[in-house]
Image 1 (cartoon, rainbow, N blue to C red):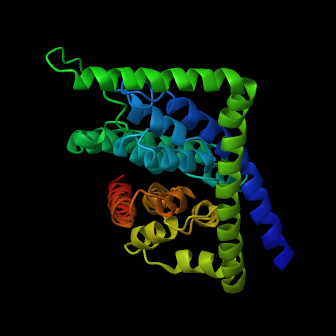
Image 2: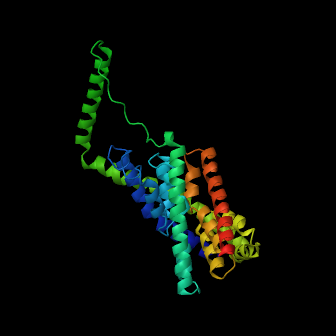
Image 3: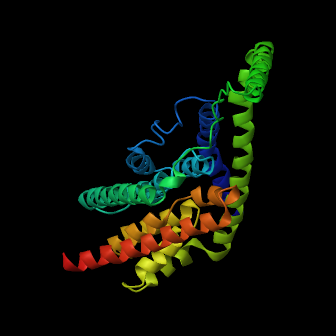
Length: 313
């Protein structure tokens, strides 16, 4: 019923809120000259795509949202973002675990899916970072003051900077705990509430849309796709930024309605609510569309490759 749509939307948003709150605390730490987000840090280091893919395997859409937000603030490379998105499966693993499939089949499916996603996520992540090396840098920090002993202008600017630093130090001493509380608690809380409200509205709108169409029709649509159309259909369904897509794909796969390759392709294209956050802010519509299109094409290609391998085995 319609109240179930509201309840589900509220629960999904409440489950996501702690991730959002911690995310904004992390961003504040990064943007105040800590080592977490600097080029040598874990989020920007050489192992970042692998860590991103491993993180994305956790069956929660909160990590794709966090990745999209960190990418927007340039604390993640595009390669690490893609690695997280590719590895994300939302609630599919939970659906497989409670399905009527045999335990060996469940184990095989989950392990195979995890292996494909982490390998593909890491490979694509490193390749993307190699191709877009110029975009790996963080937001530029304040440039160091150059001393020019030949002229007095730079020296005056240097003194002026010191004056401002002194004013900030006095201000920080006056504010004391209040400024720390505002910076690392109040500000992250307000930002998290804004994003949570936006996600809640989207979940409600999409929930009522699915309620009007009927989840059974989505399932029938997937089951009705021919073997060689399945990767295309599943990948398009996987783009839907809601847990309905991953749940529907897992349920249809569990009853034998789609092949493993098609199932994997749909979940590779799936990035949960990360797509919504990607389009919401300053990433840019063109760049966001390119990322979504790439995820769709990758899901389709992986789906066809998986189905072809399945026929050979």
